[in-house]
Image (cartoon, rainbow, N blue to C red; front, side, top):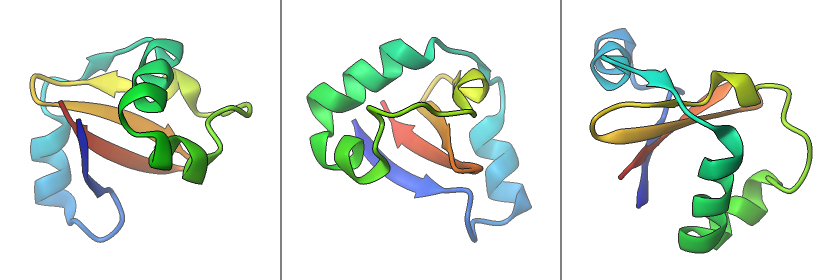
Length: 77
């Protein structure tokens, strides 16, 4: 797992490609994976606190999409 990019500054065309086929994903499951495999990101985002955007968590064939503070984090599987 690695953070590929965020939605900030990537442009609409790339965002559409990254979001293609996105389906809902369990937020708590993804947070546990991030905590295990990407502890620096877990700490930086404060994922141990409530996230009002948790219902917007998605997954595609190639990426996990975590929404935090209205920013989508595209994490390559």
